[in-house]
Picture 1 (cartoon, helix red, strand yellow):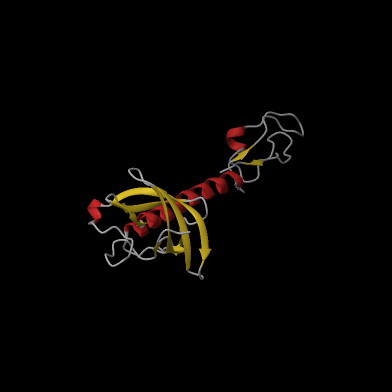
Picture 2 (picture 1 turned 90 degrees about the vertical axis):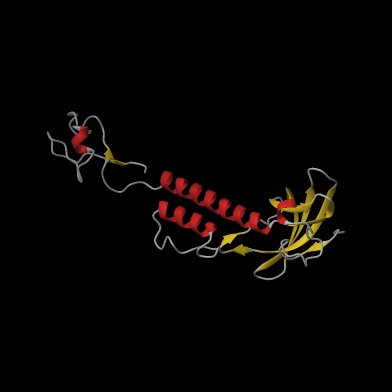
Length: 197
């Protein structure tokens, strides 16, 4: 059974189960997502298992957005724009929606009242920052994988030391940069190998 339900931003003092003291007094920890139930296309209900640093083990449920799209002028949007500009993407200033980290087994940030551990809630601000960080890391890995797999279709090339047709030495400095390298002696084409980016 779930111990209590939380479905709004914990900064809202009207939320039942939210930390009642000011934001500066809220303690932070992480929770493990144990269950995800999709409510509709935009929202899921999650069950979170929490082991507070200075208190007993607990769990609660919360409704969270499945996706997050930062406001254009927000720090999260600026981080995404910088990443997209670095990757030289078209429309780099277009802010994508990012997947919230709510799969079973994900660890998410939690706020709780150290004086009353029954008052805990998802740290939505921290969760959004985590979602952006995970998106940026995934995009960096995708770009690195793409660059390792996609060959260049033009010079510079990797060329052999000697012409496979006549055995004459190949001027690699010249042939590796030629659009269509040929042997200086027999004038046959020199085989080329595209280089990895």
